[in-house]
Image 1: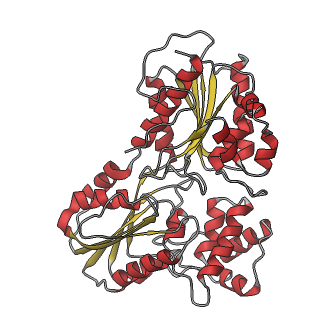
Image 2: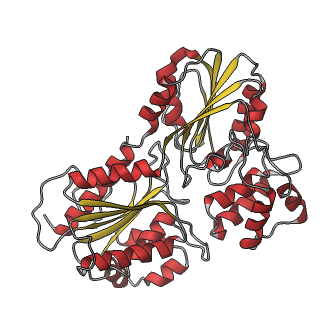
Length: 441
């Protein structure tokens, strides 16, 4: 088997297995087994993994759940769940369905009494999917501000500092609405450091940030915020809650550990370099290319066959009008630095299966990617400057597509490197370089 073909095959095997190992069903079931519910139990699930988490909760608790609302991204609910209302809505920008789903959840919450309990399932994407603007703020205001934030290069913690101050359900306010009922929250973390007040903007977590922090974000990125919105940002948010118990079920750390185990099974020595990768995607890609070249030229202590693993979440500073996402941009940015090198691939993928506003989960490149782009008359730097990584990777068959995965625990970026001469055993990955992995199920 061609070495590059085998590297692609192994990359897809790592992607598939590491995501499958971090699907929330088992983690949700384990979290629920530690909790004894004594009151009338309702359910609210929000985020890109909301349907998967709700399905697991319903399987575990059955008719103990008397009512519930599930709010997830379009295309992320596979089928109805008996007894639960499922509403698909807009992400990364909230839409009318977002408001509808949130209104239904609020109706449920306001009807809870002191003997009632709410199972609240939270996953990444909840900030956009669970929203009710404060009085005086419209959906168009939120859309404009979120669009600017997403284009600014701000990280998710900074973005959510702004979002939560414009919302009637974020920053612990939803938990307050549930009082006097008790709220048991199960969280699938997509925020580095598992910061509860930032995951889905913390609808059931006290806010650790201050109004001054939010205003510093505005100033740092030069966001065009008018005086009316600035006044909302200056209001303080709840700093304590007395009716919430929280369990975190998964994070990027477990995603990296799963990738490392799979890589070892495939014959690579795994190295988890970090689980808090951040900064601009383009710069992260260039750094990974430099590491790959360092290994490829025989420098340092890391020697092939190896899998160098980084987990986290980068950002894209939008300058152009192209199509792409942070994982695609990271991978494509690595292509120049590894040009001409053999026996290696670099890939980056989002665990939720959606990277930016595209149908791709990420991208994969090798030492021939740059030359193949040039053969098609495409200039790498022009593609990156236009934030058009989807088109660039599509041209060289470097898009990774998994479909919605049912989980959301940040991103993983990997350098896979084989020595010049190696014998291969068959694996269960796809058969050809540049091919696509099957959807995770």
